[in-house]
Amino acid sequence: MKNHFLTALIALMFGFAGAGLWSATGLGNGQVRDYLVSNPDILPEMAEAYQQGQAKDRLAQVSDTVEDGFPGAVLGNPQGSKVLVKFTDYNCTYCRQSVAGVDQLIAADPDLKVVVREWPIFEGSEGPARMGLAAAKQGKYAAFYHAMFELGPPTAQTVEQAGQIAGLDMEAARTFAASQEASDALAQNISLASSLGFSGTPSWVAGGQVIEGLVPTARLAEALETEG
Image 1 (cartoon, rainbow, N blue to C red):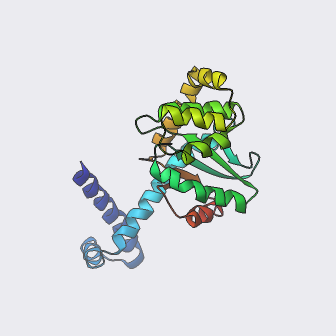
Image 2: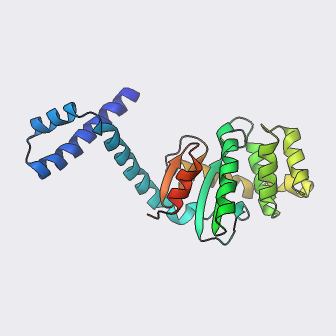
Image 3: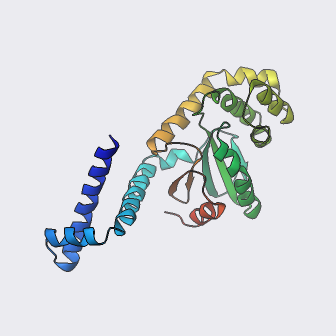
C-alpha cells in the first residue's frame, strides 16, 4: 500500500512539474523527466507543496466548524479573535510536552483563543476526555486540562484527582461524562480530525494552516500571524 501511494505521488509530481516546466521553458516531456531526475532535491519541496494544497482544501470544507469547539473547552481569551485549535489526548506524551508552549503563546497574546478538541485516540483516553468535557460544561476546563497533564498518564485515580483540583461537582461531572451530549462532542472531534487528514495528536489548525505533531512554539506563532 505504501509503495503504491509513493508511486502515485511521484507520478503526480512528475505530471505537475512537467506541465509547469513545459509551459515555462518549452521543454519536452523527456527533457522534463531528465531535469527532475537530475534535480531530485526539488521532489520533497513539490511533495510538501502538494500536501499543503490538499490540507488547505480539506480545511476549507470544515472551516466554519473547526474553530467552533465544545462550549467552555477553551484556553486563553474565550472572546479572542485569533484562534488556535488543538486536537489532544491526555495519554499523548507529545501533547503533554506542548502544554507549556501553548501557555507561552497565551501569555504573549491576550487576543489568543485556544479551542481544545478532545480526541481520545489512545487506549484509556476516552474517560478522561469525557471528564474534560464535563469540566468545560462547568466552566472549569483550563484547571482540569492542566491538572490532567501535570498528574501524568491518566488513570481513574488521576482523573478523579484532577477533577477535585479543578473544583468540579464530581457527581454532576460523572453524569455529564456519560451523556449523549458528551458522546456527540467526541464524535464530532473524531470526524473533524478525519476530515482534516490528521493521523495523531497533537494536531493543530492555526492561521488557515493544518499542522501535525509536536512543533516548535514559534511555528505555531508564525502560522497564527499568517491567515489563509
